Length: 129
Image (cartoon, rainbow, N blue to C red; front, side):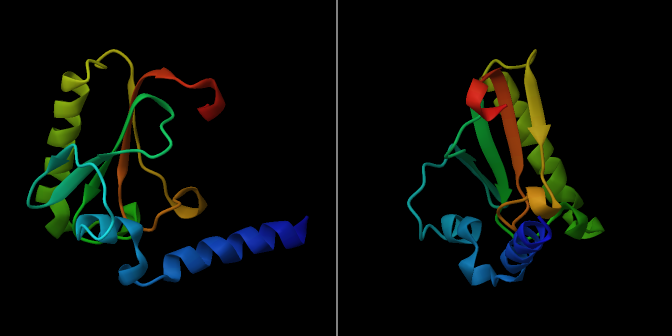
């Protein structure tokens, strides 16, 4: 059991140590990976999640590489406000005002080491709970 836990911790540590050049979200921002953009501004993009957990499941991603939630600084306040405003826009546009979650993962729960928010709304898929 200890070996399995250790392997998992090492794997996630390696994910955090990857250079920004290897970051899938940085590649999507640079348009090196073909992706359907639902929204784009100077500071962020919005894309559908590739493995949606609900009727609505989108990712709100800053273009600037910020590794994790704990790496947010005061100088990011305008970016964070824009992310909030874009989330509000999509909540209303998708009609999920009465049933949504805003999720940001960290530590071993964060699979891509680039700050992003999940907007999940509507009915959840049973296998994703």
